[in-house]
Length: 283
Image (tube, rainbow, N blue to C red; front, side, top):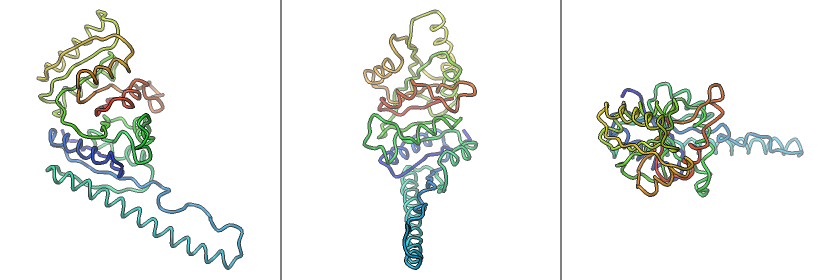
């Protein structure tokens, strides 16, 4: 595979997991990793007039002092960003993976969408620095990335564990078929057993769809089993993950024509919120 892996690192507790997952993916695919850290527009200074209604001479002195403080703060933010990237690259080097660093100011989504054209995969942690404590919430940046990118998005779990069993959720949609095709083509999944599940009634069309998906994987040399389970997708798939010990979940990310950039399927969001394993979303 020729595209890069873009790994977003932010200094949160998820950053090491992002690096560990990136190293695992790169080790299996031979791809280069591009480590990216984006400094938000507000991180360079206070961004406002803090002088208030004070005398002209005092105001000038205060503004000079604030300017100096802002300049120092901006330098510290940049140093921190470089340190985060250096630590991440060190982890890549230890794993024997080639990696480059990219530090950028500006909006995260603009940075990612600009770089994704040369990427095969984008990798991000489930949560960032601001919500490490909030187990029931996703990072706001993750949801923004989910809505913006067109390339497959790999959402790293809190900690890396070796992947031995893969669960692929299949609902017959175009995005689900693209997920099957991606698994069939990617060396990332070579040699890994894949379990394909459909949630719903065991209709003839559901069985045919599963068989088509299984046949596509079998043609690529992948061992695949199929299953139809009842219930609601969020709870049924989550139950399978917990009870069967799957290490990785693959989903076709919902997208609806011109509303695609504004909508991410509720099933995908809920599974990312609740499942403790890494998840791949394929458009």
